[in-house]
Length: 191
Ligand SMILES: [Ca+2]
Image (cartoon, rainbow, N blue to C red):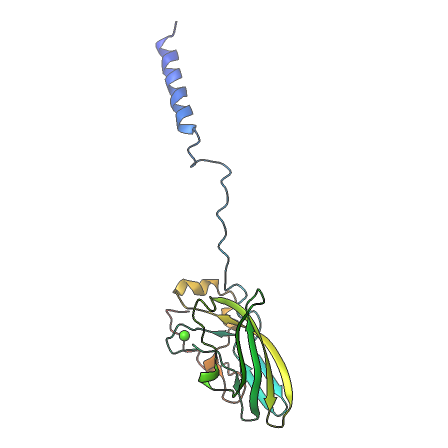
């Protein structure tokens, strides 16, 4: 025969078992959340290209921000006046797909730069090769990497692990080089 004490104990045991049943919230070994890949992780990990070609010099930034705010929107091959022509410029994504190519054009011209929309080039790292000719006819191939950074939110900048190493188009010194003292001009809402 059950005593009032044993009934109370049974009630408490039942209550405990009910509270401890697996409802998905108290699993001691939950599945880890799938990690969202950091598309900007490798950005600015390598320096911008600053290269002498014969008597000429070129500067190609390692980041640009094609969000149509007028600041660092277009990737250009910047050069001094001893560079005559870019014979070929090919940009690829990390899978090796060509996303942009242009042939036989002058440096420093916005109309010959790369301004990709998001379907063409989502945010992330890209590589390129450019065959560049100086005014004496010397040809040299330069290669480098560049980050497409879309400035969607200020928190994107948290993903930019190498942000201090980013070198922007507006920091071209006007003679095929990088000027670390010039302002990058990007708004605080972006970085
Ligand atoms: Ca921009």
